[in-house]
Amino acid sequence: MKKLLLLIGAVLVAVVLIVIFRAVTLSSRQVQALPSSSITLDTKALAGRLERAVQFQTISYQDRARMNKEAFTGFQKFLEQSFPRVHAAMKKEIVGDYGLLYTWKGRDDKELPILFAAHMDVVPAEYGPDSQWTYPPFQGKTVDGFIWGRGTLDDKESVLGLLEAMEKLLQDGVAPRRTIYIAFGYDEEVGGQHGAAKIAELLNSRQVKLDFVLDEGLTITEGLVPNISKPVALIGIAEKGCLSIELSVESEGGHSSMPPRQTAIGILSSAISKLEKNQFPARMEAPVRKMFETLSPEMPFGLKAVFANLWLFDGLVKKKLASAPRSNALVRTTIAPTIFQAGVQENVLATKARAVINYRLLPGETINKVLLSVRKTINDPRVKIAALEGIKSDPSPIADTGSKGYKAVEQAIRQVFPEVLVAPGLVIAATDSRHYSAMTRNILHFSPVRLRSDDLQRIHGKDERISTEGYKDVVRFYVQFIRNEGTIQ
Image (tube, rainbow, N blue to C red; front, side):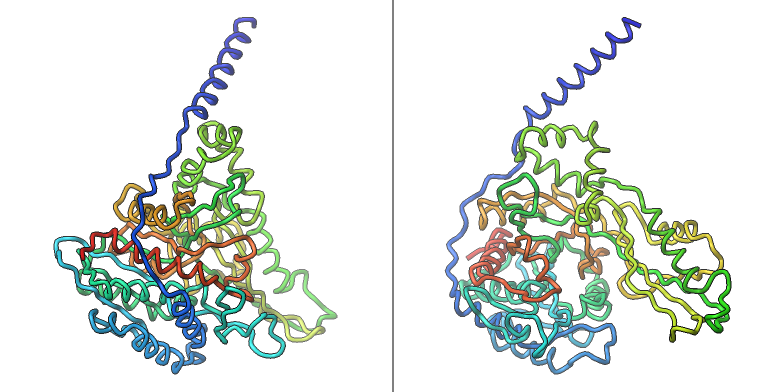
């Protein structure tokens, strides 16, 4: 027994020494911030064009009949008028009714092209005297150093920011080393099937292969990463999958005074309860693991020791992350009941009950695996289960953090925002970029926008806005990034 205790003690001491050694020897993984180019921009003019862009109500609806076609055509005419050099120098194609594809031809055909993606559409916003917006969502107004309106964060700041950068580069006589595609979808908020999907279909028909894609997804966060005081720029290297499942139950109905043992509503409620009680297991996949590994050298010693030794503390970290909704989404395939419909009157038994469950799939899961799990968990033949069309996709491939594309984004961030830490991350929402996955596995997600905690509620919420200086930084980032990509004067 004494020998066993001595052995256990020796093992514990060895483990402690290993943990401390790995924490002490952990060094920063931030690349050196090289000097940035001198970029002169007119803040007022930039803000004025973004204001004007906001005024076009390019709203996406699930019901395409509600689309304001004049808003999209008017917005595209506005782009032509605002960026004459872009439209003179680049090939522009209208794809899938209102999608836009620009081609900036490069000098070297042997180099794989790159693609910038963004979307022109926005989600609906309350409008009128009862609106809770400080300023009307489609007024496009600059007040107190902020440009207010729907689309200033999602995603017209990227559409306009890219075109502003291209216009500036053309004015400066810059020519690209390799071909650059700029793809603007118009229905990203409802799945992108008619915009980005059609653009991708066109490029695939031309057998286009891409070095990488840069789309929206993650940003520069301030005060949102616990225990790190500096701003953190996250580059998304993977996107969770998305699946909505319809559950339905039918029964004979009748008078509420003579209910059966189980009603349609009761059966369906029980099925949803089973799903919520049987969550998918927490897993720390590569994008999240790499995020913590990259940021851990910047943390206090205790947390540094934890994240430098995930081989030992993996379970503890997953448990902590799973305890809050925002971080739980990073380590789990999530389930969210979003629609429940049943009944017509208080004294009438419902003949049909319907619910929609939205899943966001962690890398490593598939739509088929989720469907099998749902059927096994519910295990009730009275409940019909069907996958809905629309925003439906498996998780994206995981981009390579050693790729030229990732390093290019990282370098440009460090040049334009030298005080910012950079790390890979996981995108928990769905973007247009998934439609381009057949052309490259290196799909990157980054918008050069600074967000604080209260800004997160503005995206798809009320009082969406971006600061005039922050928007100028968006343009500066794209200018710097393209110059770094091998352009010449």
